[in-house]
Image (cartoon, rainbow over all chains, first blue to last red; front, top):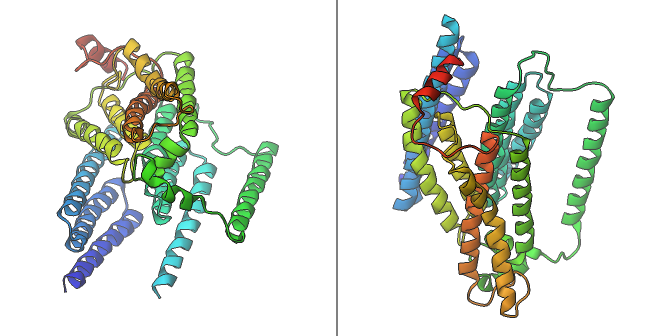
Length: 93
Length: 323
């Protein structure tokens, strides 16, 4: 039962990744594309981490998975901000 | 059914890696080429993981994609922007390169095919596992790198040292970056200590699980890259004299251990029974420091004065003036 729920959560996570990728390809400008890439992928990764943690069976593995998610969150939030800031500066010049 | 899905995944990975490699080389825009190259490295790391080689996957992701990508981007930043840089050369040189690459690829594929088809192969992996308990570590990759084939690893470290000497001979360090804004500064502030801790963990865990000196050194170098991007001109490296000591310590400790064991009547680098684990750890600590310093030096581009906590007022003014 737990495995089934975990699989369901991972599948939902993957669909967020797919949505983010489609957004990256289809959205019109840099800012909206950044939005699709970082927001959707972070949520997708979070769901996959939750799903994997449910079936990992060890606390240490769960902590490692959580650490990976937090690092990706920090990295993508910072890089999205930096890229957007740079693009905005270039537009203003 | 599941087997078919794995085969499908393998085919997709193999196709993607060839396509990404081609796209990275053929890109007319150098920056685009570098980004594609980084993606290529990450995909290679996934392929190593799929081939059950997590040690190589870690090394490829950290060095092949991460640090090489950072080095290429740093080189591009200092390249004069003439606008007529062409990533993909044409004419006879391109043709010769293509033919040569095809010949090399064909030979490797042929050799691989025959290696698999060889009847009753003597698998080296079996020998490694049989003698693993005498090697002093329980991770077979570390046993091969630091015990069975320690000589190869010593020479690899010597190659790195030669590369570092070459970088130091080329000239002084590249100009530093501006001090980071609050957001990136905070990221550096949080990530650098974490990278150092994880580097130490990888060094320690290498004895019985994927990890080791190269991966740990790459993570420490990544911390140096973060510091440099955050505005620290020396990327956290100590002063010039200490830098030199760190650069040679890998090779020096390796050779010293190798020579010291000959005093007890053993061959060069033949660790005495029961001492292997400790000696391997000692060599790996020195190797980690040397690798990290070499990679950081390569990113900075030459010897630098000692790191200071913050930039001086004059330096900040200079950075602002050079914008």
